[in-house]
Image 1 (cartoon, rainbow over the protein chains, first blue to last red):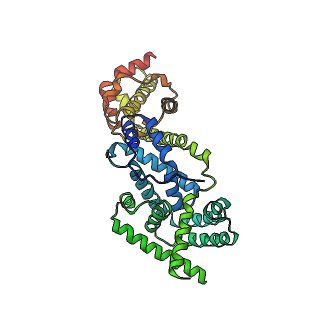
Image 2: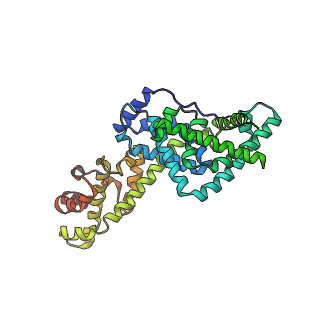
Image 3: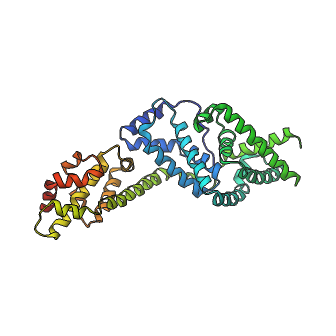
Length: 200
Length: 161
């Protein structure tokens, strides 16, 4: 299923919707949910790889954002703020449920990398390459599991969501330098894990 | 395989996930997200209801000291109904209350359903809600004090009903 590209500009409509929400119009918040639900879902899903957990965290994210909307600073970007809530909630969830989530991630990933639509969407109809990529996705899933939650978050936001280092630094509340170093470390680790799998 | 090829593989593998969501996350699922969010908020309201009854568990005793109704039976129903009115007044009107956003996110119909569910706890009717006095109460903690000092008119109204 396709998801929209991440926003790269400050959408002025968001400001209007936030202001209306702050003034007690719940339908405005409904519209903000519709606007960002797929993107936020994707961020969480790519960290948990479990639909049920993602759904729960999605609800908690939007509920937490709603409760805090009166403290939202006008001029800030709503999506940056809601991404931050989603990522923090997800990291906390993964840390709280480390053993359980690892099991679900593993099971879900076995399903994920075998799904036809993922293969069809990501590759040309090259059967040999598809098989190779399918196997590599499986190895990548196992490799991602070995990263810390913080490194997995950076990889998800940068490589899967396609966000800039600056956007990620705002979402995670860390410097751009830290984003770069975490990404560099995560890539090195993932490359090493993939190499180990190939050589084993 | 060289590091460069590993790099290409890694970025290609990760980018492939950009266009992927699980089959459960189809259009029907996303069309239902707002509705599900409202249900989630409703559940929050019900948690508030449970919390409220925990906070006011000793109110009958407080009220029995505050009012001099002829019989305990006559006291209990209207007094607790008055508390019900006051509690919802507080939750609805106090925007600084942590419970307020949960209710505010609901539609009017959903708010009415929440009120009805709340009211059923005492077998009373949601038509009893909305006395003018509710605006004077600032927080749940003030309810016992308010009921003891200022609520007789609410109680009288409930008795009349």
